[in-house]
Image (cartoon, rainbow, N blue to C red; front, top):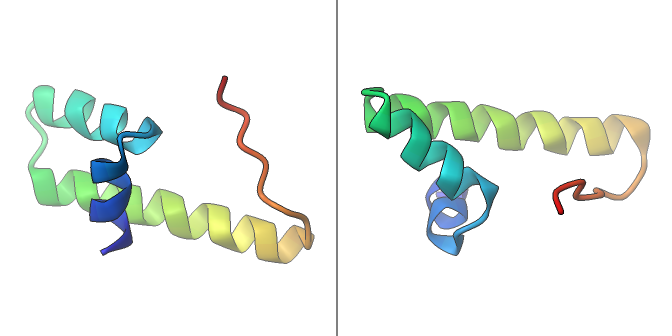
Length: 57
């Protein structure tokens, strides 16, 4: 659900999704990769006990 919402929001995950599906990856495989990216970022924030900082310009 969160991966779909992030794709529809038009942020960096949408670009990633479009690039990977354009390369021929199955859409569900790309969604799973996005889910893993989101969870990895969540755990990094929790482990470091710091707020999330978006480094994208």
